[in-house]
Each structure stands twice: as structure tokens, then as C-alpha cells.
Length: 200
Image (cartoon, rainbow, N blue to C red; front, side):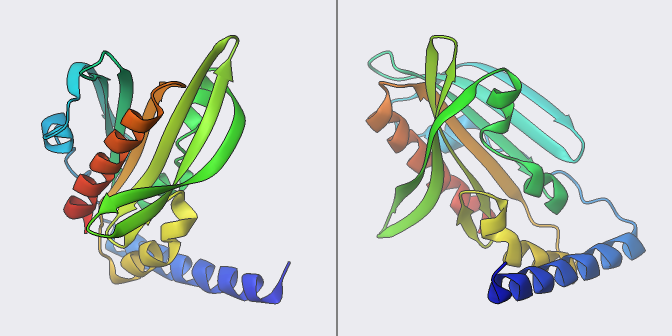
């Protein structure tokens, strides 16, 4: 392992341990933040929600909406929210699908244009289960920015833990069929922009 990476990892671990010890001393479980409404996330777009499912537990709440576009495109929008850093660290946009038997056949970074000259790096993966293929786009939105995965937000999360600040982390995934690329990316960018305003 490169010496700089080893030092960086040690500093992050020490900060997290210190933050964990401080949290344990306070013995307060942070409340789960509220989920935004689908209308707040998709207003101004041609997407509308047809069905929804939701759950709360283990320091996290989530909701998933079946969205339909003006031309009949379909997308599954998943939003999870937690103020627990360990929960955020364990989340992956691919995990739920892998648990259902999907295999990742391709994976890449996705540069998302958020508007006003801002952009963020997210993840994009092609998944396959038997003959079905899906594309997912995913990211984590926190008070210190947007990241493809938890390690992209690690320093900010460690600093929040040290200060005893319970921040909201939004776990975002948009899942579509392979041929819904441009419309799904625009939906994903809109949702990240709206959540960035909430979390920031």
C-alpha cells in the first residue's frame, strides 16, 4: 500500500474512532431525517409517480417510486435517508439488485450536470438477470457534497461525527431499462440538484 494512502486511512480511522467514542458517551441515537416528497424532487419535469413503497428501520428510511414519463418511459426512483454514518458507509446503489440475483456487467463513473455550472461524479452500472438488463445511476448526497460512494464523503462525515453533528445523507438510485438513457440521466440530475439544496 502506498505510504500516503496508508497515512490518509490512519487519519480517517482515528477521526472516526474519536467521533464514535464521543457519540457513545452521549448515548444519543440520531433521529432519522424526513424523506422528501416525490413532487418536490420531480416538479417541473414530465415524470409522474404511479406507485410507491416505503419502509423505516435500523436508522434509515427509504421510499421507492415507479415513475412514468410523457412518452411512456418507466423509471424506479429510490431515495433512502439516514443520519447514521455507518449506515451510509454500508450502502451501495448496486447492493439491492445484487441481492435479487442481478450481475454487474459494466460499471463506470458518470459526470452529472447539476446546473449553474456545477457537476458531480456519480456511479452508473449495467445489470443483468437472465435476459433482463437494467441501467442504474446512483450517488450519495450529504452536507459536504455528492459522491459516487461513501468514501467520497468520508472526511466530511468524520468531521461531523467528531463534532457530534447528525447530518442527513440521502442515498439515491434511478433504475431504468437500457433504452431510457437521456431521460433517466436528466431525472437523476434533477433529483441530485434538489437533494443537494436540502442537504447542503
